[in-house]
Length: 334
Ligand SMILES: [Zn+2]
View 1: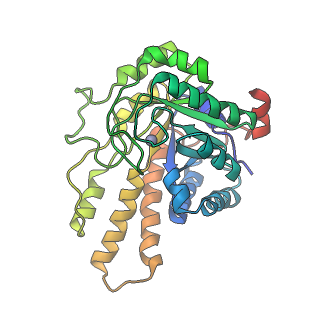
View 2: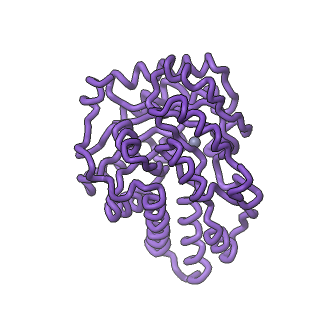
């Protein structure tokens, strides 16, 4: 049963310089899409649940959805990860459900909106690391704040990560991975103009500087959906109304991975893929009413997108590179 600590997945990715997508999960079709494609291209999996997902699924359903993934695909290493924990209580809840990794987003206060000071961030993050590491669970922290608001998380303002604070933050908290703010944002509305490789839309220099200062750090890019234009077009063609918007292009994510990013968070793209598929069925076949006839195509559309990401980020082909570690192994390590 290779439910593995996320640290192992990231450590192995660092050894071979690739990135691993983090996909958010809220329902069975998403979980199946993520696993089916991982199995096809032999990629390790980071499956994440936000606090919104925990609430939507009444905790217990998400737990068993993830457990079903592991039972159905016993050879694929899977990390179960809490996205944007907002305090020790949320971290404890995730760990009690069997999660092998948690994010403590101490860049924001418990309301998940108000930015914190550096010292407040250190304090709450350290309390989560102390709790999680005792049971072998990986911790991701965040320094700097992202733009956009998703699932009620976000200050709506961007504060880029200050590379000069990173070393001190790592020493004081002991986190295993760090989300960095480089100008990405949550949600579908990231950029109003098409990102241009010559225009520094993202602060790649921040990533490069941090990497040169702490080369062993696993950096995480949040808000990294690519918002494929063909999906927006398909949604709008079939009765949707999504304003013009652009995401983080795959070339920019690849630049990040080359500079030390090991985990790339993708949520919006799966929402767009499923919505596009469902709208198409509804528009073209208004007589249909069996949920399997639209959730099935939604699942296929998500699986195709997920597969593309495993390949683009470089995690495809690496599922069987290593022996799965356990939380017991990690307890000894910490
Ligand atoms: Zn995020």
